Image (cartoon, rainbow, N blue to C red; front, side, top):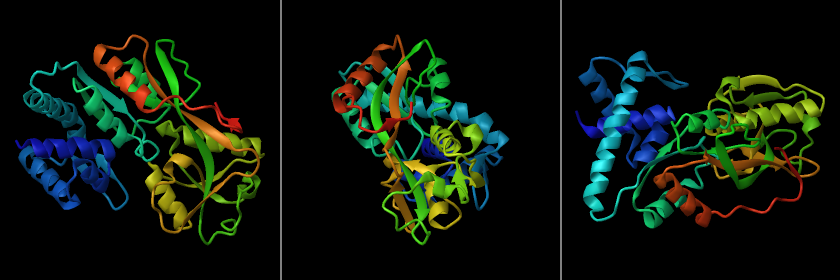
Length: 304
């Protein structure tokens, strides 16, 4: 069985999106589709279900995934051992991140770890949202993860990584798109697009909290699993949303992002890990601290 098929399967399982899986693998999207079809032929079962709106693992895919991950990781470690002869391998470190909000930082993190901690095999796992991150780190499924405050797990530690400003997303032809700032009360009668409740998104929780403080409950018309899709739906005029400045890099024709009226509001992005990390995690954390020192608390309201 070709390792490339398994790598494509693992990446697709993490992204649940063929194009983003291809981007992470550095190949064209049709090649990922080809590898997945070939894997399914060899297994005799479909591993993903495909619809026009989503990609999801089948029961066979769920059963195959942990074994595929094990094979892919073993291949990675073997390749690393061959190409870095003489460099002691401290171990693998799995970093969990949500998606679009973390992507601007990931290339620099990966480059710095390879340069400054060559004994660390850094693994990236996407679709890890703030609500789930602490339990995954505490259980040992992840070594480091992007999270939010407050942190309620006694066996974990965190530090501030970034303060992300809260923004309103509307379509460019929306009645509020011409405003420099948008009063959240002006969104009370609007349809909203948000993350699903079960996903554990702190951005969704923040939107509900701010709306409730303004005296209304958002009229949710569409849920979507990631910021890329949410912003695309907003640009298409499906509804409005509250998002954060770290997704402003996502090129979305037809989208207008505006700050909330009044004092600037921020969410705190943190890096969390177990209080007694292993040597590989310690080495990775040292690199991250040097690469991205803790920022100063901004003026405005930090929504911890």
